[in-house]
Every structure is written in structure tokens, then in C-alpha cells.
Length: 173
Picture: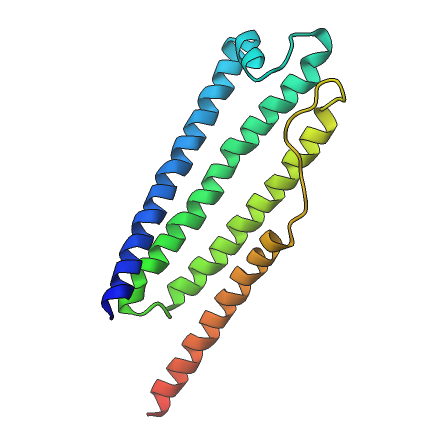
């Protein structure tokens, strides 16, 4: 393995580990914000730019629902990042192994879960917002994200086919 590939693998591991820590930290901070919104609703909602009003209850509920969805997205991101780290760690010994095909498939399911949660956030924001007090969260379709989901499933299949082909080849030699 060349020096530059070793360096890029090391950098990749460090970056992925940093993203894992940031993901967990963000989930914790969202949890703290959620609890604070229950304990000190007026203070938190004021800090978020919401005016206390009797008709804000839907907006507040929507904000809390989005916080819950944010916390629910952390395990999906954690699955993606930890599986990616495992794949990167397998590169020096040979990444074309059955467990990596399964890791890619698991990442595909986790990314699909994140995309579905993204849609739910958009629906919650649309349903609970008003013109007077909109939730500053919107949903938009991204073909890139959906193609990434598809790509992970296709790559998992490609890995499986490659592994079968290598096993067949080893059996004939």
C-alpha cells in the first residue's frame, strides 16, 4: 500500500471518528433543548424567536416534534458512520468481504430511514407553521440523497457478486 493511501485511510478514520462524536454531541444537545423546552417553555421558545401566544401551541408542538425527529435521526447517522468506519478499517486487509456487503446494505437502510425522517420533518413543519409564525424548517426533494440510497444498495450487490466471482475463480484454480 502506498504512503498516500495509508495517509488518506488514516485521515478518513479520524474524520469519521470526529463525525461520530459530533453526531452524538448533536443528539445530546437536541435532547437538552427538548427537555429545556418542557421545563422553561417561555424562555426556550423566546430564544428560538417564538412569541408566547395562545395560538402558538401547534407551533411549539411542531418544534418539539422536530426535536424528537432530530434525536431519532442520530442512531441512523451513527449506523452509517460506524459501518463506514469499519469498511475503511478493512481496506488494508481487503475490503471485498461479505461483511462489507452487509455493511453497505445496512448503510442503505439507515440512509433510507434518514430520508424518510427528512420527509416527516417537512410535513410537521408544513402542518404546524402559520404565515404569522413559520417554522424555519422546510423540506425539499433531493435526487442526490435518494440516489445515494440506491447507490448503497447497488454497491452491496456489486460486492456480493464480486465475492462470488472471486470464490468461483479460487475454486477453479
